[in-house]
Image 1 (cartoon, helix red, strand yellow):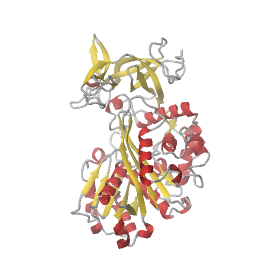
Image 2 (cartoon, rainbow over the protein chains, first blue to last red):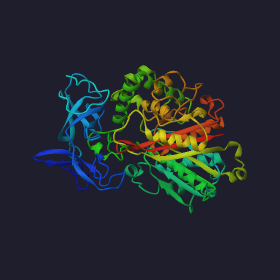
Image 3 (cartoon, each protein chain N blue to C red):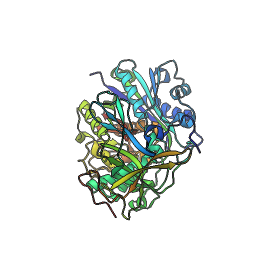
Image 4 (cartoon, chains in turn yellow, orange):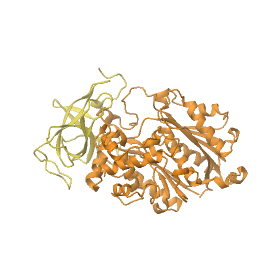
Length: 148
Length: 388
């Protein structure tokens, strides 16, 4: 089912198609440099106008959990997580997790953009896949080895 | 500082699933109960405030629930304020009523909170995620948030699954002694662990139910106490604080900075500390939440919520009994009614009228609601300190 007129669209708010690939975007304040996700028009600290900035695709799991009873439009079970990006933002997303062990604080993950919801309308959004075996982002102080 | 404001009457319906009851029926019963408890007539009320969170979505009554309930009781002409503030809608109703009396605009205010959630359309749709629209489209739900919070608290502080379950067991025990609660049967730690998984590690019995209900309170100025002859049963509002989040992006999920900040202000304004609290009602929408609230409200050190409940400190006879009404977990959580139902319990406790769940000698009570989400943080904190 397609999105109804007036329903918010994630691909307009937080995604941009760049060189044929969907990327997450946030906002960066010209004055203080703070990055926000979802993108803001004005920086809440100094009210300066923010500029759109494309976010990196590698992140680190802050915390995750397995949803057993799904809200309408989703099929349980599925993993959800708060993922920290190196720009200093944390976002909620589903995890497409293929590891033998449960995802843990500090595990490296990679953002892909795909259809995350089909009912009652289609949603294109970020999903983080993992575990990612190569480390390429700063890990939390108590980070753990990526599970194999 | 303005003169004190007092609570002189409380009323509420039993909470539960009442498919045949309307908003007006629930509101009428609770408000009439509060008026009768206070010995105040509907014509004596100077201002009416009404809190609901979902009446627009669920009953098509977006505006004017306060007028609707007022009409039922012959309360007309006076100012009516309708407020919506997530799960804190009832607490906000209370606080607006307090402000009206404190400002001298009213001598007698009626605060009402109500909700009818069982009529919800779209079964399975999450109802408490205003402010999380993007995340909602990605699979967010309040239980998902608290499932992650639980895992973080376990990882950081060694909190156990069993300690969370003990909150449900304790609150059920209280619920059996409170006729207003939705669930009164007892559960064991084993039953909590074995109930239907919702979001790891939380099960059905770790989560508050879907409920209908209403609660109300009559607030008066200092000078009305003797005129109404209610000084003997009056409960003083030592502090009532309503605050909003700061929405930090990267934060410690195992604490609510907003509640810590709001509690500090409430204690300061009341001239009291956490050690003075004799009985507390907290926003135990999930078992893990009650443990975090103990810590954030200063009832125990950070990280000690699990051992604190396990020690019996929050049970009857303990250091500070918490959720003596049964809490959201067992009394039920009709969003707009919850803050005033908490007030109902604290007023009953401070009057010494709580029967076999009475906290002996209770003189200082606390109510706490953590309402809704906004930008991955809780949106509203409402904390009140009440004294006798």
